[in-house]
Length: 467
Ligand SMILES: NC(=O)c1ccc[n+]([C@@H]2O[C@H](COP(=O)([O-])OP(=O)(O)OC[C@H]3O[C@@H](n4cnc5c(N)ncnc54)[C@H](O)[C@@H]3O)[C@@H](O)[C@H]2O)c1
Image (tube, rainbow, N blue to C red; front, side, top):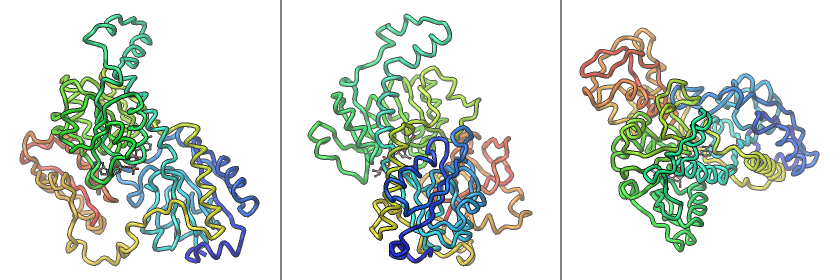
């Protein structure tokens, strides 16, 4: 049934749906919404993962299953739970080639999130399985959280809270040099004007905030133009904004897009906000900008590594408002997701086109084994990957690393890193961020003592890149 398409379902009229929810997106929400939308035409089999009480695999800093990101559980668990199902609904379960192989009846997967990063889209395409998602389910949640977090940081709510918890009553937070501006006196730079960027801009314009927007692929909404928002080049936005808010997606071009140069370009005393994704930012550079006083403060909901290591220096700075990736978490988000998932299933069994089909970007690619000699394949490198290669760290196709005999892949190699340009930890972060880019992975982690000094010999500092 996998490749039979929606019409076959329309004739069959009933189908079996496996639901893998979690402790935020409860499977019973999906089942209830499916019942409301589809009546008794869909039989649901529910299971819940322990997220968020147990962390998911982030997949950005370390390599995950088939390059999948932000998932919990195993493909075996998914295949076992969904055996014989026509539809699979999930928030975080990992769906790789083996899952599609094990589920020949599967025709539709509903991923109840903005990006189906836990699904191998190429494998889904090869098996003829349609993937739909629920973009925008948490748009207002993230936009409103971002407004709140900016106020918490710029108006010293975080500092006041921290100190009172410790039994201190900080009168100095009323001193003129300590207080912040009201929203109508701020200029906010919005990087990424997608669903969340637009919603956030709308809220801020209602406060009278001046807005600059940088997004190479989006035009301003007429209402936002009319309210005074302006488009801007990135450098100009960084140089003019009191608060810079990052709201774009992680792509080949945006990994590490905000680093030392960009923080240096920002206004003295500006505030930086990342409620989008950790790999967009060089957090070592952010730490330096905050510790030096270049930036007055920061708001961070997302990090390069999640959960954050307890000894992360950023967590100790007094001028940062921190949250454990919860900007999208609201009851509205959960209800929205369930309703949208149910509507997609209703459409599928009725033979109607989906509301949110996911682009099956790599469908045209042959399976990795048929790709021929990996070394002959050109490696597409993002600008920041190119910089890493210039520093002497070899970046090679993931397939090449996979196919190397272990004696070769573990053998020592020369990592010539330009002295002083990249310190060890920062180099590691950059390599991990690049390796996370577009399904690539790190064959082996860098050795803990990798210092990245000029001409140093290191064991296997390979970052890999997808072709
Ligand atoms: N913290 C959370 O809990 C949470 C929840 C949901 C989404 N997010 C994140 O928020 C971000 C925005 O989500 P969204 O739903 O608005 O995504 P979206 O896809 O609707 O919008 C992303 C925008 O980024 C723009 N963009 C692409 N490259 C760019 C570049 N180089 N410079 C500037 N803009 C660029 C795109 O044109 C697009 O308009 C994503 O990173 C998403 O993962 C975070």
